[in-house]
Image (cartoon, rainbow, N blue to C red; front, side, top):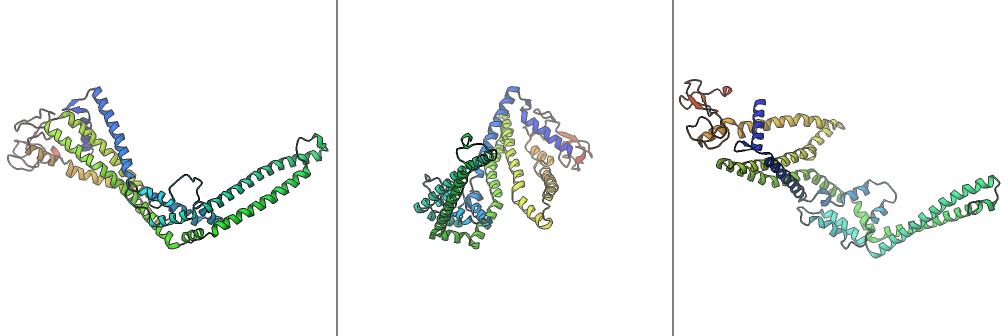
Length: 413
């Protein structure tokens, strides 16, 4: 097994840095590397673009996060806070909530959830000039409270200082504070009463906003269990399949490139076009690198990961580190199976040799040779071996002797 791997690696590096079995010079090698880097960057850029072709779960269900936060909140003001989000600070945006949600569909596959569009429709009804004015009034009063509270903090600082001066027996004319202790206390009480009055006004404005028909309809919609359950189920399902969809589109982007590079490489090898063969080989390797990277990324977040996560969560509770154990066990087994498959069917020496002998090609490098050549003029590989039965020369790597038909022991090849 290790001998085969070493042989494959040797062939890989030989193909990557030679033209017609002659080594590349340093300048040519640098040019090839620069081309590889440029193409690799563009391949990853294309993969990133095509991976966003299908809308993401957050784009398909744009209301989910906001709705979920509302349901989990326990604050008394949560109804006002969710209605307040329907009245954005930026009034320059000409698109309403529904139009903003539907923008995700432009140039993408998939569609936005109808429940979220209905959710946006309720928000658009709330977002009118009267309700905007209520929010402005609330904001103005809250700004007043902030200013008064800042003044109170300043007065409290001076109040503490004047009390110390009074205890020390210092005269008022020598004080560094503008307000005496008695006046400071009176002003603090006055400001606190004003804050209380403004807070009551804010509370009345909030109740007025929540009492609006469009607000009550929106809150009732938010509290509908069936509506949220449908959104939650759709979002979870979309999140589960989205990595698989991304991998499918990325494979759709890479596979044609791989097939074209492979076809060109085989054609160039048959015709003896060394430079084209070298460049197409590099392209083939470059196109395989992102595919392998994306497959490994998928294994960490895709449907397989979710399946293992659900199984282990159900069987072992919080022992989620067992997922890593499962990967450590499964990945080598899968890798071993892939190696065996390629060794037996794709890179099988006997299968390759049989095909090359039929086409009068070198059993090692697949270049065209004459029928009676014992050594390949391209790579110097010896084409024959001695039959174990009749001791005549027969084709190397083929299972039977061409003279006596005796089976050849592959272990001596």
